[in-house]
Image (cartoon, rainbow, N blue to C red; front, side, top):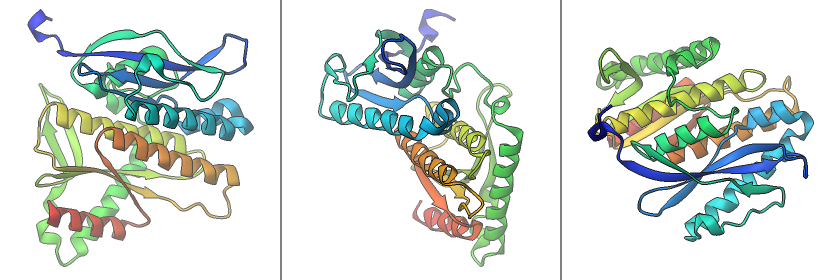
Length: 287
């Protein structure tokens, strides 16, 4: 790569680390703080709720509370223009790691690079083929949900305006293709599902990959995006699921909202395909 082809977005990033057992020296990266070229800084959680539950078991709920409160505290301080070097951690067993410099194409790519370099428990699209990362069963569930929404649109009286907006393929570079769940004018949407129980981790991982597609869409300026959404069919947990599984589902949805907001994407929760179809119609009219 020639110097003229190198990315021009210069940034610094810091890992936020948690010493899981005080005094042990064993640390877990729970968040990343990135400071851009203009001095603005922001923070993102680096470890998803299902992963915390898998690692800590019964203590996972408490760990999620600790991690979530830490990220919120840092976010409030950064919004108040506190310098990264002066950030105060809300808990005594967490601290800011060493600063690292980074060149990338935009802020989201900096976070992707930082998370791949600082933690084994995060999810990043940097340097990997995203189509190989999502669990096959989760991808199938996502496709089934998108098809149900499409069929609801086709059966509606206003279907002629939207029926050709599903499953849009866009050429990125070379032979690479980016596939969108729905596109109408400046409105674009991806589809996902979030199911309680053991599938929630794969679902969350696949949703993040859908959010990475929006990064590519905007970075490559493939479409004039006015509004981007991730339309998620959230299965309501019945009596067969434990209290812990119900709480994990709610935590995962909050995590999806946070990740989407960080990418200027709206996270929309729908109970049924009919609700999702109606929502698409309303957004398309407003586009």
